[in-house]
Length: 336
Image (cartoon, rainbow, N blue to C red; front, side, top):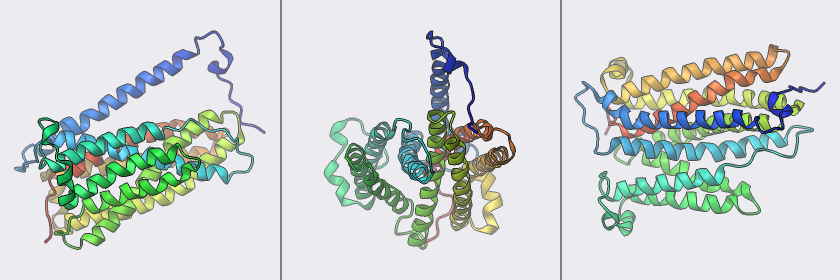
């Protein structure tokens, strides 16, 4: 039995079948624009009536960091799902076109922008003359920023090489740099915090990027049984990823907002409000994932699980943007 689903696009050879593709492109563009508004307008809403002051240019920093996180998710998800697909017997050899080079370009620009922020003391540079590249080597944050810039450039070269799988190593360097940057030496137990962030960010990138690439692969494999098998295999792994993300996220939050103050800080601090919005959205994503998994098990056509999965990937994109905003807002309590 094959899971063949006739579509208008397959039957239409007159050119009108391009309209759904155009509508999808317009929808994606609209979602990207709306997502960009979150880090740009979010800081003022999160900081309202908190008495806190954010660093200058916090909206731009949040946007750059969200782009950097997205540039991690897409290629890591592609590598992850491609490896899963190779374990499936009878899987088609063809897959969707890689987006890695595009995301590496975006990640390189975002990392370069963040490096310029570091060297100009969190202020947007007035011009190229204010950017002292040599000065980046003199600070820990500067060296980490340079590492991220170089890692995206190397990853792009690896993606064009004969062994594209090696691009996982420069991507791992970016994840490591982000984990170290988020927990400076003056923080209480910075190594523990960095380890939590390392695991959390890795699993989150595999979850978000993996789901996106699974959906793209299903479109490429339409009409084959391997598509449903790939979706089921990803769903099982995603359950483990979600559990690890939840555990590491809770531990990281409790390190910065102790149990006795967390309920108050979730509503009275910018960090807490953004974190609460992220937690609620992740809970909605978990419900969508359970819905998709239920359809996958019980429906006559397992590929009907794609509908909630598409909504899930959109919600996960918003989670990535909120994560970028969260890193730019002032931390409510720092333990020294």
